[in-house]
Image 1 (cartoon, rainbow, N blue to C red):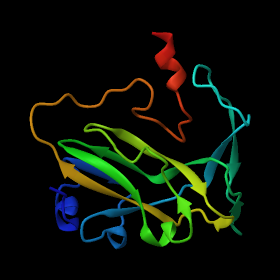
Image 2 (cartoon, helix red, strand yellow):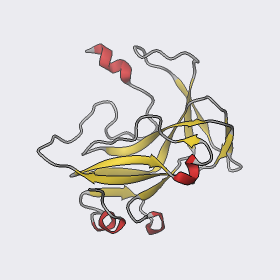
Image 3 (cartoon, rainbow, N blue to C red):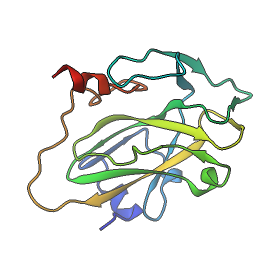
Length: 173
């Protein structure tokens, strides 16, 4: 089951936290999230799963930022979310997809208990100018059945900004 927009709104402050919340971003069965002005780009062309890959921050200027084809940009949502008793999912908006911009490569699936900003793995099939504050993706909520443990990752939980891959920490075990 996917929550309706009215159910999302009714559960605000309880099972669902979206800050800031703006009613005009609420859809029939999702909520649009906006793009923050900061992005990260990795410093190296070749990335290594076993090492920490450094990245530099860039800021989207008021006149927009032209994204290059075949380059990965990490962004984040302006909105902070926290979810209990539901599975949060993230998808790009169809209007964004129709311009050839992917907002998550494979990481649109959230976990019950996630608390933080959503990191976006942005990739375009042709150059596109983007703008901070645009409603770039939508979050929706699935019900969950059975007993579960809430998400408690030491890598991504309670993040304060864009999160580059921390896969290298899995190799430290």
